[in-house]
Image (cartoon, rainbow, N blue to C red):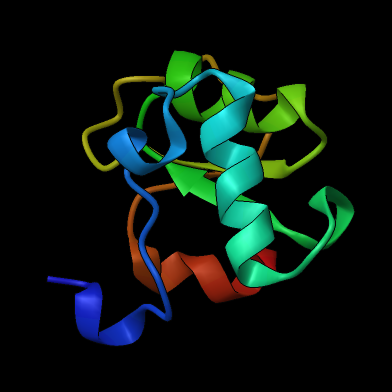
Length: 88
């Protein structure tokens, strides 16, 4: 898993809300100690990740490993985490 590479994890239970509700994104910003304009959110579900992050001002990146969202053009769309660095 990715956990060895992460500084922290925010769960919906801890935040008291599920994505795309703002509290879970705000909890992550608080733990990271950054403003929304300084953050990116990488997720694999357009409705929950892209819309949720953008709703509070976080730049979203959609990871679309199986080409489920070919029509998405309003945010970066990557197929693998190996592509992430070029969008940071």
